[in-house]
Image 1 (cartoon, rainbow, N blue to C red):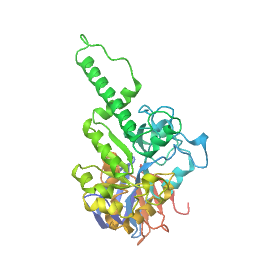
Image 2: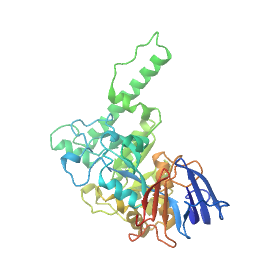
Image 3: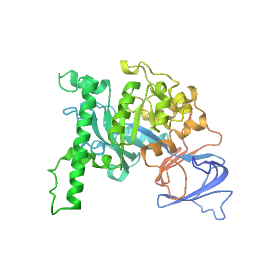
Image 4: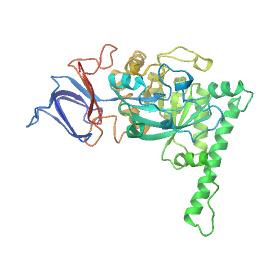
Length: 390
C-alpha cells in the first residue's frame, strides 16, 4: 500500500510532513518520507494534498460489552453478584458484530479500550481491541490492566441489597483485601517456582491468578474515580501496593491537578459531553482537562461509550479544546497519549515505521475533529475498512 501527495501528521517525533508519502506491507508501516516516491504502483492512493494521520484511540469505553439497542440480553458489563471480580475478562463479553464497531471505524476510531463496568470495587480485566474484525481474539491488541471502581457506583449497587460494600471505607477495604491476598499468593508461587522441593504451590485461586500480572507490573491499575477525594484514595492504594495507576474519568482532577502531576499519574478524561447525572459528578467543569494539562498531567479523552456514542469522540475533543486545550495537544489525547496510557504505543497511536498501519485519510484542508468531517479512507492493520462512496 502506498499513499502519496499527503500532509502527514505522524503524532510522533517527525511532526507534520507537509508533502510526503507512507507505505505499508503485511499490516505494518514500512516507510514514511517527504517528497514523491520513485515508483508509484497503479494501485497507489493519491491523497491530492489530503491529511493523513493515525487512527483515533478511545481509551475508555464499554464498546461491544454493552451492545447497541439491547437491554439485559446485550449487557455483559457488570458481574454484580460479587463485589470483587478480577477474574472477569472484557474479551469474553465483547460482541464484535455490535453495529457500534462500524460507527467507530467509520469515524476513524481504530482502537478502543473496552472495560468492565464500575458496579464492583474490582470489575475485571480491560482489553484494547481494534474496531474492525469478526473474532475478538484477532482484534485484541493487549490486555491493558485491571478495572477498579471507587465512589458512588459500587456503593449504590450493594446498598440496594444491604450487602458490603455500602461505604467508601468498605469499597477500599475490599480492594485492599483482594490485593493483599494476591500479593501473598504471588509470593507463595514464587517460592514454589524457586524451590519446589521445599515449598508447595498455594491452592489455586482464580482471583489471585488474575491479579498476578498487576502485582508484577505487567499491566496497570485503572481506577474509576470522579471526586477528588476518591482519586486520592486510588493514589493511596496504588502507593500501598506499588501499582501503576491510571485514573478513569477524573471529573474533579482540576482540584488536585498538582498532586496528579507530582505523582506522574495519567488521567483518561471523560465523558465530557454529558450531564451531571449523579452527585459525584456535580463538580464537572469544561476546564478540567485544561487545568490538569497546565500542571503537566498526561491526558487522554474518552467517550465512555455508551454514555457518549463512540462516533462522537472527535466532538468530545472539541469540547476539551473549548475548555482551553490547544488543538494540537487535544489531538494527541486521542492518538499517541491514549496509546501511551494504555501501554500500546509500541504498535499504534502514531505513524512510524514498524507500527500497525492504522491510518486515516481526509480531504485537503479538512478539520479532522469537526462533526461534519469523516475520513475518506480508513485502514486498520493495513486493510481498507472505509472508502468514501464505496
